Image (tube, rainbow, N blue to C red; front, side, top):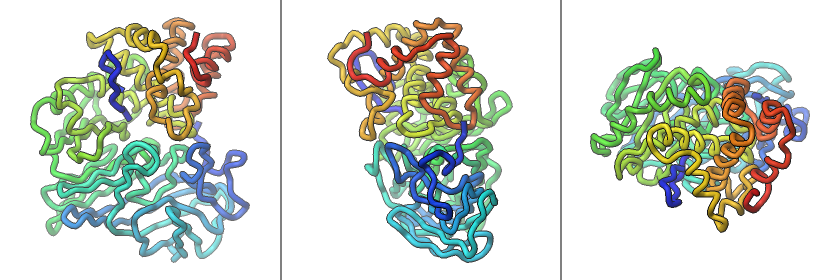
Length: 462
């Protein structure tokens, strides 16, 4: 996610099984609501690991009603007499586990499922949930713009740190990444845009179904649903499809020109972070006014109608595309590690702007460091606190940490470290401790004092 800040210079802003970590599991036979995140303890669920979601969703913009069936393929990491899925704002009409009817109860935003027979530890199982209703708009649920936003023009499901549970039952935490098959059925004349590869479109009785496949593990908050009238363009880059969708309400011009540079920016980022980690490129420009910030949805970042209202700005492309490596391919283990997403994406943005003729990275750093009274020094980016996960410090002081590290260890070691990071943790999860260990290994020395000052201490680092 990129949040615009005004600061003088134009600033744009090891896979782990759920339930397997000490203190994060449930009892011997109950998967608990909450995966153990220190900032958001109710997010996600323990006791199982999802391998694939199959989503079949029908949405009618005229009524705002959504009807869906979600198939969850998972493996039990402990014996399960019952387990939880995250879901809010929708009514469940039926649940099966292993093809047999299961009992379902609601506990707030948790769907508690009791299968007809316990699921043995280590066993693969399939749960199917049928549900429907008018999704709840929840823009202020826990942090920046989360949830399902509807208007007469369509709908957008997008947001961080949680949005998936607004439109399908899910283990809603980045630690449980999975593959996805997504079918969006919408009225003729509307588009149903999501992540990954477009496998096909079928038409029947005034409705059109868009079929998408996500072939690399994806954190649930990155799942995208955009329904509306879009001008959709398809191309190819390096043998991979490029699919863009721009709301018809957005005038033809700046948005189209900027979005068309996405492959060029991605190619530059490959020189920093290694090979592009996914099998599709693209982007979506939405016209829903309540979606105020850009979002790094996997393979298809979301931009707003205002993103390019004032003219060209490729820094934002660099930020959201950098997230494809930092945040999407390598995902946080807990939300406390958010600087690994936003600090890295901001630094990649600064590198791109320097490459594209803008201010140098050193200028970006110096301009911020010179401000002794800045709020950057009041929030430690390595542990910002639940209410500050999208603070300026997480973005900008996070990026400054990387630049200071680069100056400390040298360019060759630093950029080699970034490529090792994205390669070692590709399609998985990692935390700040993992990055510090890599940095110390690459530098050949302890860096405790450096990281303590930059990531964990209030005040301006010396």
